Length: 326
Image (cartoon, rainbow, N blue to C red; front, side, top):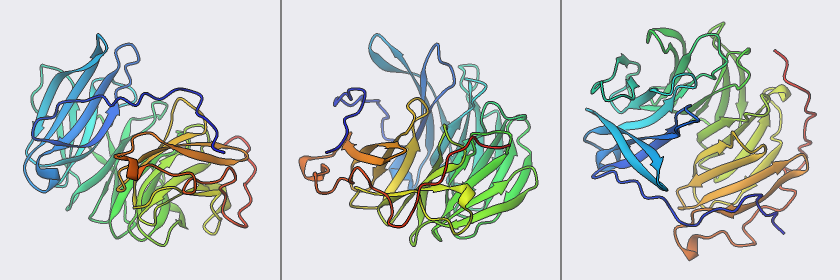
C-alpha cells in the first residue's frame, strides 16, 4: 500500500493568465519574504512567434501578475538567480540567452548572449554558495556552455553530442560540477574548473529528457526518459554503476523531474501522459506515487500501475551514503 504524503495537497489548480502564450518553464525567486513566481512562455506552442517573461506575486490569497517582458523569439527555459531576487536567465529558440532584471525600470534584457546555434533547451544558475555566480546552458546544437552571470562571458564549452535536453548543478558548490542529459540516453558530468568531462553513465536506452541533482545528497542524480522511467544514480559508482532505483508509473515519456528543495526524499515528475506524480524516497526504496494533477479519471494512476514499496532495480544494491567529499 502506498505511503501517504506528510502534507495535504490541494486539488484546486491556480490559474495564471498568459494571454495567447503557452508556458514552458517556471521558477521562484530567492526572495523568501515576498515569494515571486517567474514564468517563461511562448506563442503558438513555441513553433513560432514571440516569448514572454512574467512575474506573479501572491497577495490576498491570489497570484497576481506584476511585471512582464517580451522577447522576439520563443522562450523555452528559465532559471532564477540564487543570490539576487531580481535576476533571471532565460533561453530562447534563436539560440540566445537573456539576463533580465525584474524591475519596472527595465523593458529589455540587461544582457543578451548568442550562446548556441540552435534552440536553448535548458538554463540553470549555479548554487548560491558558489565562489562566482555562473549559469549553464544546454542546447539542441549538442553543446553545454558555462557563463559568468555578471559579465555574460563564457567559461567552458562541453560537447556531449546529439540533442542536450537538460543541465543541472551539483549542490556541493565546492565541486563545481555540472551534469547534462542527452538524446543518446547518457548522463554526463563536467568539471567547470578544469573544463573537462569527469563521468559518463549510460542511464537509459532512450533519450534523457530531464535530470536533477538531489539537493540533500550531492552524490545522487535522478534522470527522466522517453522510456517512461525515472532512475537514480550514485555518481560514486562510476560509469558502470547500476541505478539505485527505477520508477515506473507514467504511460508516456517523462518530460520533467525535480527534487523538492524543502522535503528530503520527495520528488515530482510530469509526463506527456498528462499526469504529475509525487514520489517519496527513503533508505528502504521509493514509495508509491500519488497523482497530483491528473488530466482526467482515465489518466489517473491505478493501484496496479504504482511502483511497489520496494521499487528498486533487480540486482542493484543501494550504495552507502557517507557525507560528500570536496
